[in-house]
Image (cartoon, rainbow, N blue to C red; front, side, top):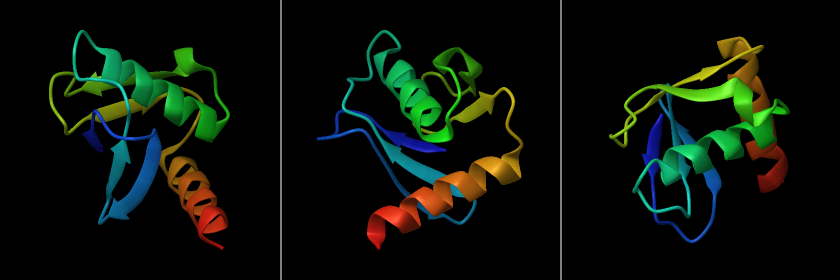
Length: 88
């Protein structure tokens, strides 16, 4: 996952290969951008915010996110379907 902090809105932008590009409004200070990322993904995936965590890359734009209760294929399908629905 590639996260850009300090954006105009919280948004899931697009897949770039197998990397999901995401933008959050929060600044990259004291973990605020990571928290915003977790809240955004939880909302899109229909899981509690506590089920989403940054497993690796907390201080980097490139992150590995752990999501309890969802398989990787499910996450990809849900996010792709949501993106397609917004573009239609």
